[in-house]
Image 1 (tube, one colour):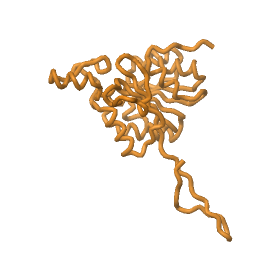
Image 2 (cartoon, rainbow, N blue to C red):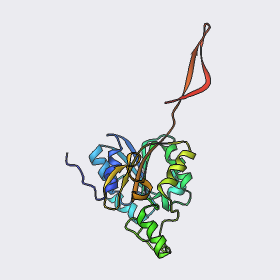
Image 3 (cartoon, rainbow, N blue to C red):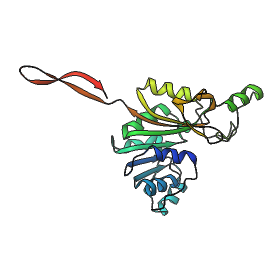
Image 4 (cartoon, helix red, strand yellow):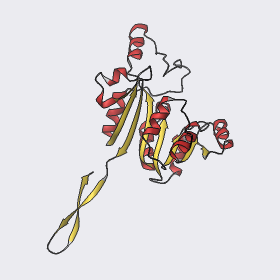
Length: 227
């Protein structure tokens, strides 16, 4: 089988975090290029949801399983844990309620993969410092009055939010502005400065009841252990 070559670096990294033959939901899937890549390369079952009717229709014409809908409103239609992975690529910063979206991702899927541009990158800091204006970069190419991005946040902001929400960061990958890949936790340089784009693999803590043996019977105490 010939694998599809990605047109975006972060898509290859997203693919590397997913097991073969998984059930995947791609939120904000466009016309389905990532869906095609994951179906071909991982033999995965992928469903997409896309707000733009025009883009959704293009994907449907290709034979892809895409629903036209608004993720801010329509994720409630999906049952708990109905997917192995839920992917949100370069979209979290455009959501009205990003915290609520993260909750929904990990309700619908066992794991979530989230990628976003890092507003703490050194080029953005320098533009703000010396120009005193909202920065324009390759990762954030829009003027302030014309951008779809409504929440600008840094790598550190996102990590703190995950900690607040008891979300486990299973893996975290950074990309520099030149496309060099590195593991964020193992970075020798300050990750929040050199990361142009970040990709996170997320999950919730799993709890299991503690079984305690007694001379009379075995019972489950109202306690839990963390895997």
